[in-house]
Figure (cartoon, rainbow, N blue to C red):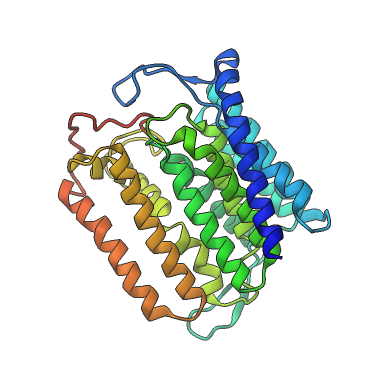
Amino acid sequence: MRLQIFIIFAVAFLIALAVTPLAIKIAPKIGAVDIPKDDRRMHTKTMPRFGGLAIYLGTMISMAFLLPIEIDKRVVGIAVAGTLIFLMGVLDDIIGLSAKTKLVGQILAAAILFYCSVHISFMTNPFNGEIVAFPLVVSFLVTTIWIVGITNTINLIDGLDGLAAGVAFIATVTIAYIAYIHGRYEITMAFMAIAGSCLGFLPFNFNPAKIFMGDAGALFLGFMIASISVMSPLKSATLVANLLPVFVLALPIFDTAFAILRRYLDGKPIMQADKGHLHHRIMAVGMGQKRTVLTLYAISAVMGVASILLSRGLPYDALMLIVAAGTLVYVFMKDQGIGKPFKEKRGGQNKKGK
């Protein structure tokens, strides 16, 4: 089993590594480029943003040929809905789509998952441990909110070279390990396919980037993490099993939630780009792109370890790490003033303004 896990990771890695240079060449020909039209961009030249192709092919090909599972309704649903999200992202990277159009596409993808029995159907009562089953309508709403929310969290943190790919890699490796130690080997291999694709793409995306993953890559990553997480890395139906994906993805979830709150309080559209994300605030204290990204990698990794400890029944050990990670985030937010506008310093612009 360990060999199979390694093989699926290696195949996904090699596919993404091989396809990314091809994507760099294809991007200008189809118009999938990021032109620095405003001061939010850190790059000063036109950049290809078709890296999602490498991530998509690396993940889907390795999963299709190497996962030792029968083609059931759930697998088909994830494949079809994931492809829909990827194609919608490609269109957005080439011609641009409105936020409403993308939202409709994401809800449609969530509906496909729900029809194919990939859904959140219950939660655990935190007080007595009993399982509370959701009515059909509630199950659909909860599933849709989770899928749409996590799909967009990865996209919203894709603001610095290598940030989204690295955070996604850390998250998927963490969930894969949790699934492995709890005997969920198919979930392990699925997440290792995503992890391998992220790592194969990262050498071309880390600062200084040669290519961006674009919305095709970011939305696809978020969707795949969200949809496979619904199947749970734990066999049990405990509260911890319900919350583990939230802890693993705590950094992008926090950044997204804070962005929505910040824009709402400022009276701005929720989907309007700004410069108040956590990575902006870290750069504002004097860190460059690389150090900022590495700092966020470290915070993500700490939350990943905390999630592993939680899955192994060590809540107090996990709490210590969560407090440490939360303290780091608080320091950076407090340094800039949570309610204050972000003040740019030289080299502190976001390349995409998400």
